[in-house]
Image 1 (cartoon, rainbow, N blue to C red):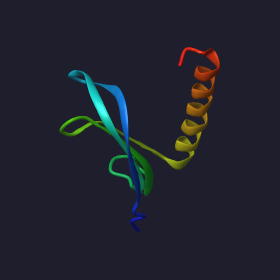
Image 2: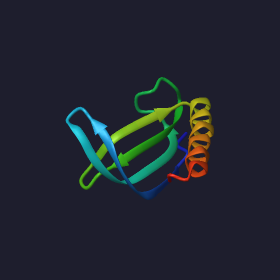
Image 3: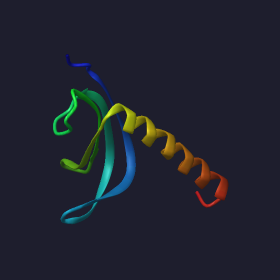
Image 4: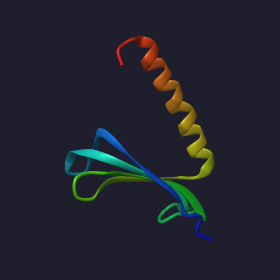
Length: 84
């Protein structure tokens, strides 16, 4: 069953690819059928550059939750450090 759960947001960043670093300016996130991961559904994240996807990631739901928790911890630490 397709979930049709999806969103996108503008970002400013870079992603490392096999051919080197590429600028990214948009991130799309969805929870739908996995393309490569061996699970029925996955959190899918794509970071896009000017013309196409630069990097794509699929995570199972438990890994996505752990990723979100750790990402929040790193953001909090960065803000507390005063360097962000």
